[in-house]
Length: 385
Ligand SMILES: *Cc1c(COP(=O)(O)O)cnc(C)c1O
Image (cartoon, rainbow, N blue to C red; front, side):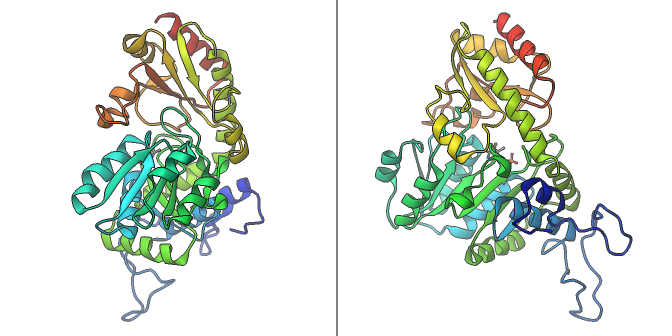
């Protein structure tokens, strides 16, 4: 049931999820096995040999992800960074250059600048929402990867995926979109011209803050073969239990995201103009510079909001430590609301670099609790600042 004609929610529940033929179990079992018995040497049942190469539970997740992103195939990994690492190793060789946004996820920047740089891969950053700046920074024939994150983290900048894909393709780059913040429910980069989507499935796809995972979704056989080979050859696969939990989470992605978005919209509107805030960064607000663009390339504006505080770093810290429903923790995308102080938490690894996040910024991952409770929680914490 991966028929692309079916609606998103139907595919979220059924793609790659056929019932178990031997027992009729509605939910396919978790195949907790490392290896598979052969009917005589080389006599594989359904093609399975050893779980690093293939496992039915992982396959069911991968089919589901490919369907939701509209890709040819998907590969799932033990974490988002493991997925990014596998993708980059599959497509880069020494001498290649990566161009990425100047506010990409800190861990992505750490991966390329600390793990890949010693292997001869260089990276530079640019204001990805400024197309002229991207045209000037991209190195035709040398920039092998154009890495886009939209909305970006934590300042929620919006970049034009279709326009950037065109720029990347004119100059010979592979266009990658980290779609973690939007999820495939809100935004489908492959349909806008990107070549590859990566995810930290730890966030909205898993959705319950109980499992780490990552994925790479591609739309060409050439990329599929390369990424599939690194998944098998380097082995950072997702285990069956993790894959199953992620599938379970994805079934409710659409209803969760609708609620994340409406709760976040309500909070952003309530906070806009608050005397203790300099700015509210949420693409659903009409004054947000990416509002119009986000309205065309996203279904709704998602559950992530950042705010900057008039009182600087001390006020930001105090705010982040003063909520009660919003819990102070890294990560995002779960049903429970979280609050974070990026400059010392998620983005600590980019302090002192061009990617540094202003120290008066606080990030909210708005959960799916009751809107009134969340609004009251944020307002009372601000009152204490
Ligand atoms: C969390 C995150 C990652 C890394 O994923 P892990 O599952 O933590 O390895 C990558 N990109 C974005 C946008 C993220 O939020």
